[in-house]
Length: 639
Ligand SMILES: Cc1ncc(C[n+]2csc(CCOP(=O)(O)OP(=O)(O)O)c2C)c(N)n1
Ligand SMILES: CC(=O)[C@@H](O)[C@H](O)COP(=O)(O)O
Ligand SMILES: [Mg+2]
Image (cartoon, rainbow, N blue to C red; front, side, top):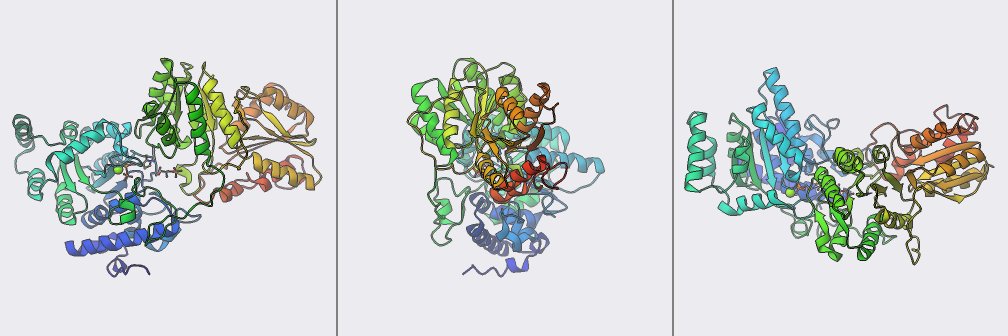
């Protein structure tokens, strides 16, 4: 039985909250909280972060004139309450489903989402851009960025704060400090914030009011305030932000609407960038979330009464786990192996590695750029770093991969988890581009696992590659349930394998589309076409002998990969052209993800839309063989 929501039922947009009293806002917050829990219990998704900002969300929409005032949520995973209040309530149970609401903020979805997100620490930069645009146009709307303490570990946040005071006089940054990232937060800034919070307790409203409602002209206020802080040694916190040019306000209890509302009203009148430090609890107001180690960061469907999450069917192990377990085995043999994560210890499986080797795992926080160069330093001094970053987040560290790793030919290993389509998190999290961007780098060894045994072998292979950088990609989700051989042997670098011999068409797969390629071969056989299926294993160095043999012995060659154009298929085409193998009429199709950002759905559905399922591969093959009327592009269906 859903909780009654009489007040929320009357709120169809933020404007309906503007005249509510504090007691009414408190009631509204409780109703929004119940509604959030109810929706996510059905859809799964990011719950704890949203529960922690219910009061803040209500207060912001009450005080500010959204959407005229610009409200930017960092990451956007905490924006479910915001979606409920901004006209999307009736679609909350479509969250993260095909054709449903995005799990993050998204410009195309609502005018209340002025800036899309999903990767961390973009909010202050984007907000500052809005400020500069507003100032240039002579307008007077307010701009607010809400960023979490975990995201505050990312360099971008500091780049933006460093630039703020020089750029605008009117920006409100709200630091939502729940003392959590996905895992407990790490690093000096986190420790600093903890000291600030524990140093003086919450500031009383009176003190905060004094701080934000100044009477003195600004230079005098500034001088007086600094003198007072420094000479009396009374600094409880915020000095860091003050030195960057922000007016620091806080810490304040982010669940206390009676404090938040007047503070926000005051903060919006200050004529310099303000950093409001609110302290919240991840998972607030829902006991199972409050008590969970990850504070219910990301959940599957669950029972609202018990908080029990739906159990998985107990199938084959996840690729992530296979990776981590093999890395532990390699590390047992070689004490130079170390592992690095950028705030994703459980997501990458490195929590397993950390249990085995607590001193050899480094969680650097949300700081992919630093993670990569840190790994480069480790490698330069003889260690064997496995810099384990989701494909999508490695995008942020690409210059470091090029400049600090590849150019110096340092043997950093890049396990790239969540390669290919990830499903519910949608286009921001799809690992679509790594083959192109890693494969373009001179000296890089680039592998993709076709199944979990292959993945284990790639871990072993990377452990041995000590003269250059290497990377291997593997997807979100479960393996195939294969039996593991007694010994996991490294692969021969740059050698693929033939998995099934045929005569008329060759399907060359890179990664876990191998299963669909084999199914496609069966379907082709049923139509009278004999297909060879090969697993390339390496996109770099390519197995040129294998490719030329496939080209020589077949009428058509189809490449298949879980990535965007400009990846494996492009490398193969390049090699074929260079060897003149295209000069004699070989028919080639490169099957890749479509040239659009596909919205979230179940991965199988998305791959089918992309023409990368067995039917799509068959269509590609038939098109190459001139046996259908799909057209010149011919590469299966298109999203
Ligand atoms: C660049 C980047 N790296 C990693 C992530 C994965 N990630 C999403 S939310 C999150 C934790 C964010 O912590 P915080 O900002 O404190 O928000 P909270 O969930 O605590 O509200 C992480 C690591 C990401 N979204 N973007
Ligand atoms: C918001 C965010 O970036 C992460 O929470 C991400 O959604 C995790 O993805 P996985 O569930 O694949 O670990
Ligand atoms: Mg946090």
